[in-house]
Amino acid sequence: MTCCVYVKARSKHSVTDRPSEPGQKTCTLVSPPAWVPWSLIRTISAIRSFPHDNVEDLIRKGADVNRMHGTLKPLHCACMVAEADCVELLLEKGAEVNALDGYNRTALHYAAEKDESCVELLLEYGALPNALDGNKDTPLHWAAFKDNPECVRALLESGACPNARDYNNDTPLSWAAMKGNLESVKVLLDYGALVHVTNLKGQTPISRLVALLARGLGTEQEEECLELLCRAAGRFEIRKADGTLPRELSKDPQLLARLTDMVAHAPTLRSLARCAVRQSLGVQFFPDAVKELPLPETIKDYLLLRE
Image (tube, rainbow, N blue to C red; front, side, top):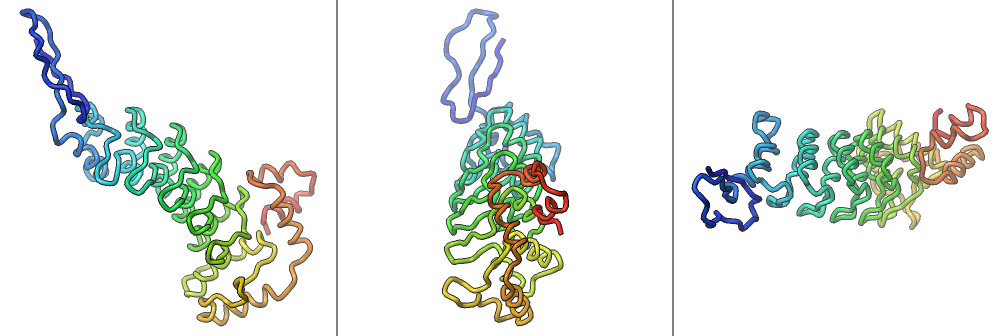
């Protein structure tokens, strides 16, 4: 009797030539069919279109869960399509959770853009929340940019740095602000994201958002986002370090007049005190920290930017 055992595609095992006794059960080691490794990532990519294709069956036939296919690995692909069940299966079968793809991105970078469940699974299996891709972007940068507040929260709860800097010195808050992503901005501010940070071009999260508004792309959400950032900042400048105004503001005289009026008035002592207290709290979940302070509830709400 003979049974056939598949091994991973990179194995060099061949059929055993050791003679066997009559009637003895022997096992033959063979490589999986050539189509199996490549079929795995194609199946994952189309898993929602062809749900009956069985990823587990392909793995059982010898597909390598850690094999690079072009620029991607199966785990990265599963996160791109936000298929949590497939992500869990790949991790259970030995997929390397912090492996890099062709762009030096981890699976967590892709999951952060898409799906909280995938993010939580990866973190549970040891994904690094502050992993850097080729541009020094963290998963938190991408979650903030895509306005996925639940992913932002999950990453921050697992130790992601709210003030991580990318190659341009932009923080996740800056990425969220440039898109007017209100919900992500709220979560980041709750975890101690700094408002007074500048990138290599001298831009702050507020000036990033102002540029969006100046292009006429703002809605009520972006306006609310600007008000929130201004409260968190206490005071801010609209002029760049060299004293000039951002070029975008010349396109919107009304916005320029409104911002000029805002910065012309000295900030109140109360707003400056709020900014100082928030900075003194450092990086932590502000709602919990403020709750423990011996202060009236109205002042606690004020510190948490609830006006």
